[in-house]
Image (cartoon, rainbow, N blue to C red):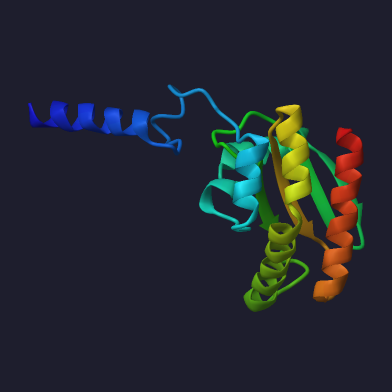
Length: 168
């Protein structure tokens, strides 16, 4: 009796929740932000949990079926797929252990890439929202030396422009 009550309560909470959960994602249609809602979020400029690409299946699909663009040791792998989130893009960041033996170096580069992405993602978000598309992306740093912030920013901005030109 009590278990049935808790299951009903969880189902009701999942329906009323503004966020998609694993159980509720199959029952709720994916809704995207409007341009006005994106403008309101732009002020916060965060990279939250629901914007992170974590699904192992989706990451495997991304590398098997996705397309990529590269420049200066950075690679952007992308794939148009329906996502179980309201955001138009889910992103992940990777630095191979083969190129950087120390975890502190790998973590520093991932932090650097996340910061550049966080600051410069909004034009792409707006474009994808207008086109009603969702995208899974993976940033990979394959260079042999530690990049500076300015080099990483220039390269990532160039890759974002290449992606936007392919979308248009």
